[in-house]
Image (cartoon, rainbow, N blue to C red; front, side, top):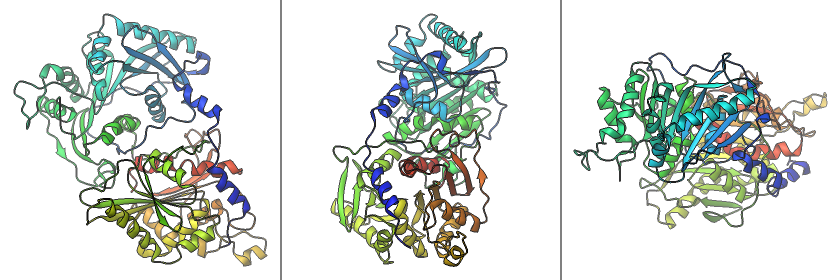
Length: 619
């Protein structure tokens, strides 16, 4: 395969040298700024029903580790600070296309605890078009409850909300129902609302994201933690209504043991006991959320009517934060939307900037291969290591995407040079792939890793010319067993068939298509994950990324589907998705764009592609 031309080399260099522009920084900083009502369009469409018939069919979503990244451009809509002269701040977010019923009624989502920008992003990601109120206490957890229970305070908040919504819609709008959620200490605010006799009837459903902490009951012991009943009684009362089908109640949490107070795990156990409901172990790999290769597998669940208690495996800070960072998927599960459906991310432009210093440890492995260990990384006691490898591009950027995805395992970043031939040559020796893994193990052992340290799986990502190395790795079918995931970011080129070209036709050389098919077929069965993203950049003298991808899809017998115009990827203002071909955990996504920036953009969105696969429960 000939090396990529100068055009590709220039693009590859540009992606790693452009800094963040002041304009982009300014847009990102406005996520909590107050906007005028004119920024929002109100739409008289039916608001989705807030209750459902009693069911046990809810499918718990996949819970993944992810970083709390602020969107480059804030969610479309307007935000307003509702000054209530309390220690708790109340921020109203009105999405673009505000939905309300023909009679002017709507529903309000109320969330306690967590950065407003993140909750707004999750509200948008779940597709909600009803207003959102985020509540954050400046003091401790109890402040939430004290503040919301102040005489008439929440009624005044609703009045201000109705006033804002009416101004936007230019007609009377009234909040009729509430859905309430809380993260961590936000449980206190939820409990406060449940204790208000004039507000509780408005609450149709409650979602607690690892959020329920109560003091010990008199008969509580270190080995049998029991909460004070007065602290959980409002939740028991609401859960009982959900059990009968009147409301919806979901308590989803980690299995972290209680420390200073009785936490969600033991509070949930007490609620189930009060309702006469038993929790059952979840069979590993029985559903996407229970897959053993996910970050935090679902291990226990209890379902009775519309009351649900879901326990995910994990006892650290990462899983605690994950409950908020996956909130959109929790709501979608409640709405009975298939949480295992992969949501294709938009290809929005994104500026990057080289950091002044590297966070974590960087270890030179020689031959332009570098091992990166994120801050605080330690090999697990059982010695198992999941390794990520990235081909092509500045190592500092590969580190950034690794951390932006929320990965905390080791990464090997390879920047061999320009052109696919240098990457092909770097992995041409069939033994080289294993040699790199051996180098990683040796480096980890030198830093105190157990003698039984071993790599159990490898994930591979590449950009542009980096595919040359990936192709050589996959050419050896013996490597397929240990490889779990491959992501090619506009990184798939090939030669053209000489005979066809002589006749004026462009056909991809069969050899440069067939080499990818065995791993792609494994992904189609769900055993592996293989994701390809392409641009429309034309390459006159060799097959472009889109041409090779189309040829692969055709040989796999898959059908390309035009992008849904309403999807977040198709609505991108920069490079809308044109079409996709998906089966199992194989995905080929064809984005628009023929300029240099789209090539850079697809590399700068590797973290989002990774997250999309995680969220769908792909291997």
